[in-house]
Length: 210
Image (cartoon, rainbow, N blue to C red; front, side, top):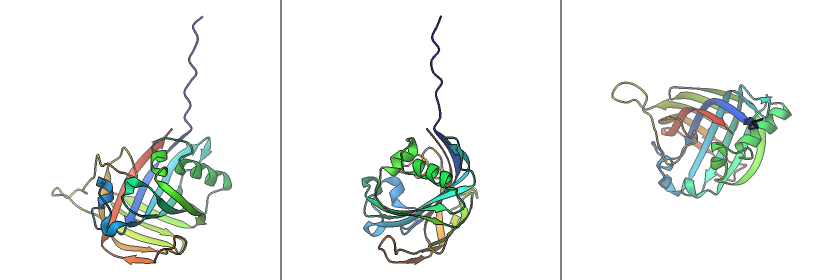
């Protein structure tokens, strides 16, 4: 009798959309491995899970947002972050999403999570999110508000970033642009409040699994 190899199991599979804003001028130098403008980067990264499961828990139509203070080159790590979880999440959904985005369950997300030096707080907040083709809006309680628009190429299509040394959606193209609106409260991070227009934005889609 021939032994049958055990079937491989997938711990999680999630797919959805990303919206990102920061204090760097567009296009953000962090994505190509250069130091951020002004020596540091104050950014917000939002992943919206359109559909997916984590260890059998359905996390579809839920969001996770990092409010991050990056002290130098993005690849050097040492990020200081506050994690915001969609307040519609059940306790089970929240723990499932945190296990993915903290890197505990491996995959490409774990490489991103390894850059975090300190998680200052995990907070629940109401969220609204739209994103497609480089356009998008984000609101996280009364702490984050953003609206983004893409750059356009000579063909009229949204400009794309590919094969960059850093990415918040590894394996997928990203649409760079600017944020006509970027507001963030910095109290928990110990930073100044942000109210800027015309700085960097990124939008794209992701599919993560492990």
